[in-house]
Amino acid sequence: MQVHQYRSNGLNIVLDVPSGSVHVMDDPAYEAIALLREGGDPEKIRRELSKRYGIDSDGCAGDQGAEDPVGEVLTEIAELREKGLLFTEEPYAPSIEEFSKRPTVVKALCLHVAHDCNLACRYCFAEEGEYHGRRAMMSYETGRKALDFLVANSGSRVNLEVDFFGGEPLMNWKVVKQLVAYGRSLEAESGKHFRFTLTTNGVLLNDEVMEFCNREMDNVVLSIDGRKEVHDRMRPFRSRKGDGGNPKDTDSNERDPKEAAAAGGASVGSYDAILPKFIKFAEQRRKLGLKYYVRGTYTHWNLDFAADVLHLADLGFDQISVEPVVAPAEADYAIRPEDLETLCEQYDLLAAEIIRREKEGKGFNFFHFMIDLSGGPCVYKRLSGCGSGTEYLAVTPWGDLYPCHQFVGIDAFLLGNVDDGVVRRDLVGDFKKVNVYSKEECSKCFARFYCSGGCAANSFHFTGNINSVYEIGCVLQRKRVECALMIKAALAASE
Amino acid sequence: MKHIKTLNTKNLRETVKKGGCGECQTSCQSACKTSCTVGNQSCESKR
Image (cartoon, chains in turn blue, cyan):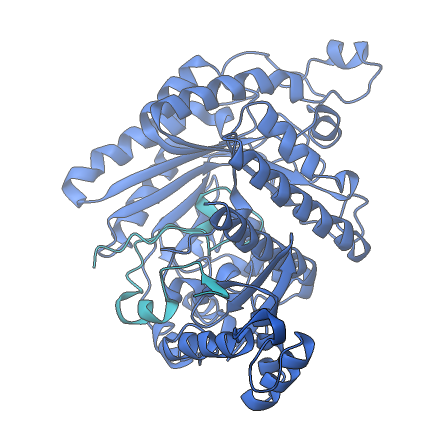
């Protein structure tokens, strides 16, 4: 039994964690919940609340007439309890234990078609695309084997997801197109449907790429951090010779040395080069009813990141995701524990502004505030995590398999390859066991049904163990869940 | 109700019976690559 209550933006919000029920309450009801959580019996609570609200112990509100708000509150709470919407038990542990023994299928691949990049983003976990390894491009042959592996290991799952990732995937554009064609050729016979996604920094984006993506890609993720100075600080061009042109299947267009010299040797940011293309691409996708996201990263250097989200919204983007950087604690741009208070205030500020804009008909979607109270994933999905290492794997340019893109290059997590399939079944077993009940911290956390225990890679990088938690990420996740619920409450109140 | 407004129409407990089909998207395929955001995904169950 767990109830989480908090005040936000003038609203009293109560979350019944096991059922996922969200209630907005007036002050007497909110205070009654607090007293019930402390274990008070209803009669004592009636007396306490009556005292606070100046009501006779027999329920009469003096000259306010015969109303009995305290009695009403207690009746409403009892009704919700009866309906299984408040103070509910959590019965899922045995089901999840059983669920974790299921034979899993692979349903999504992150294809690292290019371990190379034309930017030198300072926070890149792929280390400018190389992932602790060598620069390389995926061949069509390797990619084809990866898609065959996916079809063969996907069981009865119909929709298969393939993300073209890097490095920068447009540096291997010819192979991306070939693999999309190959995937489509498999669909009829296999009864599968491929959902392709392209994640790009935009440097090599052009009309031909956009037209192809609008035809074939279920989603595109466009990397931009927000304000020009913020973006350019962390996402400069590489300073090495390039060809300055079109998407290629081999080398890249990178910053010309003459240009670097003209800039006094300083790194040149990519904002101006990509922004017009992203605006055009997003506009096309919106008109066609296709999915896209502009996706950014915030760091210690832009703790006022709400301004970056709003900057993107002001540019006309209406599907926005901006996430905290994941970086070694010693990195100058890493989020520090002392940054958390400011960051939580920024989420509050952003949430209030989103409500304001929504009411004015100028709303936008912020990925980390999305929450579906009438649908959303089932409890199995919510408790068993993102699927890394089991349902979701990353493939390197030479065909090695890893649990996800964030584990690529770490030898201890090499699962197998596209020729032999997954050979480290023991590792898959370790990932299958990761769920919120296997983490002590999660079992007490109200947000466990929204983050599903957090990111295994973040946990590994910060604690050395995939079955632990990344505390900074947890604080921010809890804040985002609170804001998301508050936005729902505020918009419901104005309906 | 006069003092309490309940926002959602889906009770997680009900999903125990019919959930777990696995047709839903993996979270990192959408727009998060460095965190885990599962609560905002859609259920794609045909059951």
